Length: 348
Image (cartoon, rainbow, N blue to C red; front, side, top):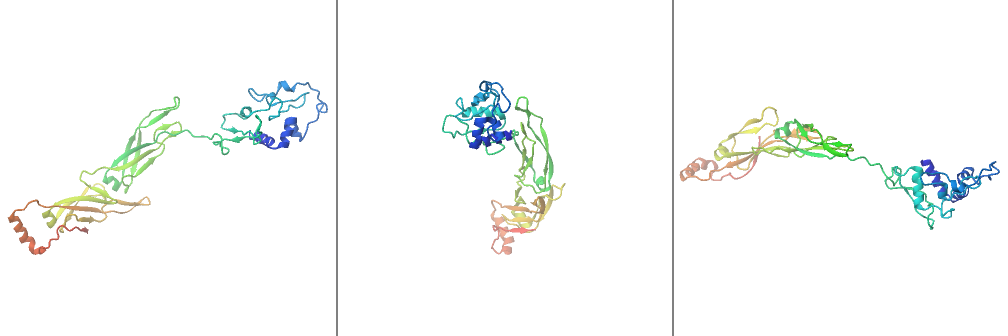
């Protein structure tokens, strides 16, 4: 097909070849000039090239293009306004090439009338439209669209983010009805979600071609890990686990014991922890390397800390006798210069 297109373009672009073709047809082109007269060629074949024509497809004969092969000579096809019978306009040309090369087969032939007259074959020949796979034009192959992508959220505990976990997640998805070209309800798909140590809330995991089906295949499933709220008020700050600890004034002064979530060893949800020094309201007691794994380059590298955020519960009222007793006990120790109320931090 492209050989035919190339030959046609070469003829139409070269005025000399076009003149030969208009006068003597394809045989003249092959011989490089005018063919021998019919009698010299040994032929006295009958006349009437004008009415019979050569079929080019539905609705096309040599007469469509001003054919004039008389006396049994070669059939001549003249393109242009000067052709016998009025030439060929752009619409006829379009139909010709669709008949010859198959219209609607992914190629788009475009023409531009440069004759200045009323309907000749353009000297510029044919072009390929904007979506042609062969150039800057025509109809490009477009793949069928995939099905809809699905986004789901998976709540995870602090322990899962810290130590990793494997979860099963059921996803409802559609299949594609090819016969009726529409989606239909499909069977649920169970996904295996691997939560690696050090993942954070907001991490998104992609499961390719596991979503809804379309004519071009299935879309993806995006699983977003979200943090399951703690019932104890624990929270994550970067790679640190912050644990609010509320203590009385007596415990703040005399020491206390609390429970710290164990994010290091599986099977031990909490570990007891003793604080013996005096703590102040707002102080942050740091327990080194007891936080979340620090993930770099796809691997855990070090750990964050567990942080006790101290909140001292001061008494709302004191009797005169209680105040006197506190002064007697604390007065000599602090010398009247109370350090309570200042904040600081200690690392254990």
